[in-house]
Length: 129
Image (cartoon, rainbow, N blue to C red; front, side, top):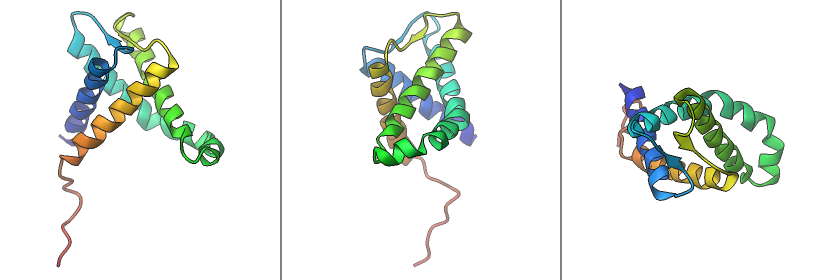
């Protein structure tokens, strides 16, 4: 159940990025299916590839005082859209350049952060006074 809720949040965040930023285009009759697939692939890319990239570029992250993480986020966002395009037959979810990927990844991060704040974490126990 928790996985479905997180996937729904990421789907809303990806839809917000496509809606708010004109550089990202989600097209076709299956708009919400494309958005949901993009969110699923983005979640998998963030779970598998992003930690490897962060480990390999830890020197750049430290040297840039953490700003290089934005580049990693943009790359993973672009890579997930590329995989979505391959699976959907092309032309469905397009991110044309790095700057679109950067802004889109920032929008997805912010929307996901805000929506995740609204969900109570049942793993954490309330502190006794």
